[in-house]
Image (cartoon, rainbow, N blue to C red; front, side, top):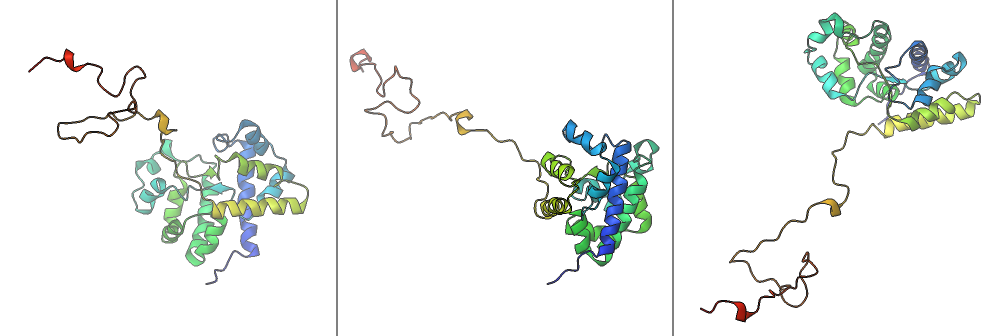
Length: 249
């Protein structure tokens, strides 16, 4: 089955959205790059206009709208945004709302007519695209005022952004193209991992369960001869108390 991908004009719009995002980073955006190493965040925010223009031509959005954050989007799609959308103190920064609104409208159009293309440029899951397509334009504007929606894509991956900042802004077209293909492949084939539960580092750090025997337990084959497992070196497998020390019945 063939899926129609984005056309040349679609990528032009992606580049414009990316350029607006990179320009916003240059003017501030400390929150958006806080997870990156400081030298890398500084290089991204202080990139030259020419460098930002080259980087903006990546065939995907350099920013995320939390498309994979089910806890964030589930109440919005269900029409239960909560009081935060209507509280002035809990709304998104005013400078972010126009960019988020434009990005949502762009992805909404894709999700309604070509969800595959929406997934290519945003890395969003199919379920998110389907629910976005069912939203109204008024709802999109309400979504855009939700705080915390605008994020740096793969903000926790220093390797991802190191590649984009160094080779993605290169003067050589072939080098930039290789960086863009690598980054797009990473977005489409390696979604961000979910947090994993902490497990013991090694079995040796886990407590050894104590062995207990009852009167109905069968005798152990290791009770004679050699010392049993987990027995202190000074103790043998046989009770050192002799029979003569036992009280006579």
